[in-house]
Amino acid sequence: LSAEQVGRFSVKQIAALDGEQISALTEQITDSTHGWDATQMAAISLSAITGDSDTDALSTDFVAALSEAQLTALTDKQVKAMDSTQLAAIDVAKLDAIDAKDLLGLSGAEVNALTADQFNALSTNQVKALSAAQISNLSRDVIEGMDEDHIQALTAAQVKALTVNASDVQTVSASPKAARTTRQVVMGTGDPDGQMTWFSAEQLGQFTDTQVKALSASQMGALSAEQVGGFTAGQITAMTAAQVGAFTATQAPSLTAEQLGAMSDAKIAALKKEVVGALSADVIASLSATKADADKVSQIEALTADQIGELGEDQVAALTGAQVAKLTNKQLAAFLVEQLNWMSTDQVGQISARQVVALTVGSSDTSQLDNLNGDLLAALSTEAVGAMTAAQFKALKPAQVAQLTTAQIGALNAKQLAAMETTQADELSGDQLAALSETGQIEALTPTVLASLTTEQLASMSAEQVGRFSAKQIAALDGDQVSALTEQVTDADNGWDAT
Image (tube, rainbow, N blue to C red; front, top):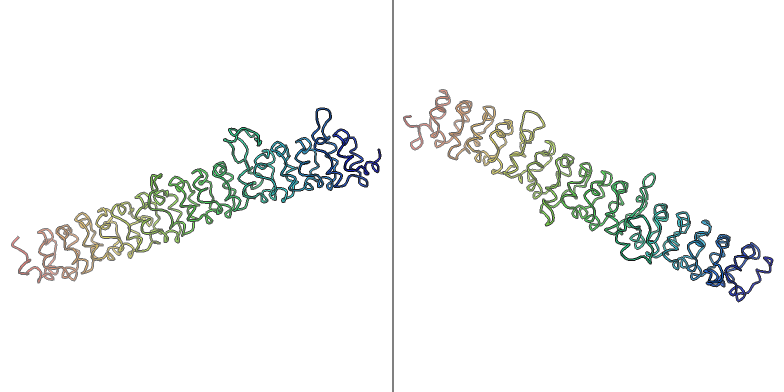
């Protein structure tokens, strides 16, 4: 029969043909002039497509020869009737001719048979038309070969279905449920940045906890800042410490307070120091100072020394009083001098007696306490000042001592006062000296320190204070100094006794 003759077949005639007969007419049916039209193509019986016990199914050569118009004419039932071999025979360049709704009829096995080239040949509308169940049956080759346009075309439901099983063999819809318990995301890292970078932030936000946990460190690190910002708090909670540790400084500015709030102490500690240094001030301020039930320490306490060393001025300034008060001694000791001097007086005022002993002192410009700005030193609580070690107090610069408040001076203990240097004593004001009113304070001053005081300084002392001078202290004073104390020495109640 010629193409012209076959082209005149009626619907009823076509419906009566089996698969072998139609396959024998491939050249005529696909003739560019007389080939079958949409009505004729739709008349092909399902049994002709599938074959039966007596006849073979439509040949792959027939399927491969169909034009785009003829493929478009196939009904959803006809497409569904095709087996994986027939589908695989469809020319890649013609796949997008199949009606999107017809693709919904494909079984799991048929979808599983698609090649990467065939899938990428589908239009984005065709991809969107696939069900989540069909997407879950794509082969690993298809998933790893999926291009950017097709990844970005995936719907939320389809994104959740991007899985293969642990043995890298795609399960199909008819497989036992038990086979689906070990599924993992397998999107490749690709070249150069990987397929993961092609997902939108909204799509990433649709990943299931299981999918998120399956992402590798290299995949996490390849994501853009916008993508990382798309993770939900629930997804952050599902991540491992190793995954959080893969975040980069470039991604860090997009991390939100809500996301950080979902991190455990172990995850906070796992963040790279450069990442912590790149977090916004608002995010730093959001770190909890209260320990969560499942954590060993609070989020602020989980920061490592290296992470603290990366905090910038705005971040340090953003620390709340509660956060400062919760810092461990090791953490406080990790602050650079410049970082401490970025703090406000209110922040420094939260440093406790427990913490203050951790502040370093020394002769270099990198030690903490002896390089703290005077106004900040004056902001320390009296309890904190009183808790300083003698070595810490002795290391304070004279100018720092001059800025201590009278309340702080009044809180100094005997060991601190006994360690006072003459250069420090030289800076004491009359009000500061007058504040040494507690029992044992005057007595703790060394004769050398007392002898270094000017007559004006001595004259500022009360009769009660001068009355407590020891014999050794008095012996160190010269005539001018004693004369300056005439009123106090001769006071009726507190004047010096015979000794």
